[in-house]
Length: 223
Image 1 (cartoon, rainbow, N blue to C red):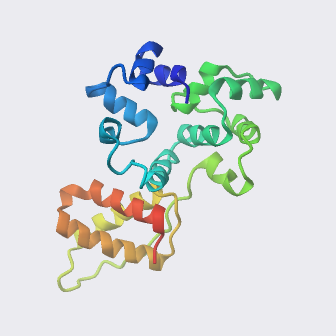
Image 2: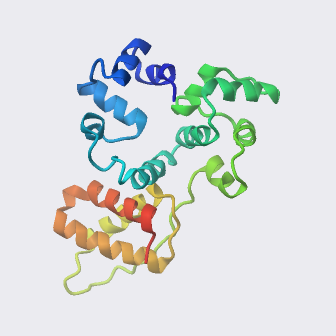
């Protein structure tokens, strides 16, 4: 991502981005959070260079953040552009080469999910960006929905059905976030893990449980 692209994404001046990059000035407050989100890193890592997005764990964090990005077409488009080393101007030019009306600004709106291209344009984008065939369906339509898990509601000693229902919802969210498909057996194992985590961590921390499960799924799958 160029300084100009980052400045547009943040609504900041290019000179300010240049100062941040050179160390002449440090972002803080809302600018720090916005910059971290744009670069898909943790704010703390930008400040200190330490933490989960540091050199030792950058691959794991990247996998987790890419799983989040895959939820929207804009996120998938941005990742595909990064993989192909294309910026918004290059994509727009390539689309015009296949008789598709496109501007640099329009491509940026697609990337930020302000607008959604029609299906024919998405197909052309997949060709322009040379999206591998095995990734084509996900690029066009997003990750598949999680596999359903049939659970009979019956009285089981010591079982908290409301928490079990919530655990199932948390796993569904984590599976979608991690863009994976689980067998019923694998999903049942994850529900059990979420059920216990919700008990230990507290129901109010369901988002933390979901993110932990999503990271585990993205990095290791289900054993």
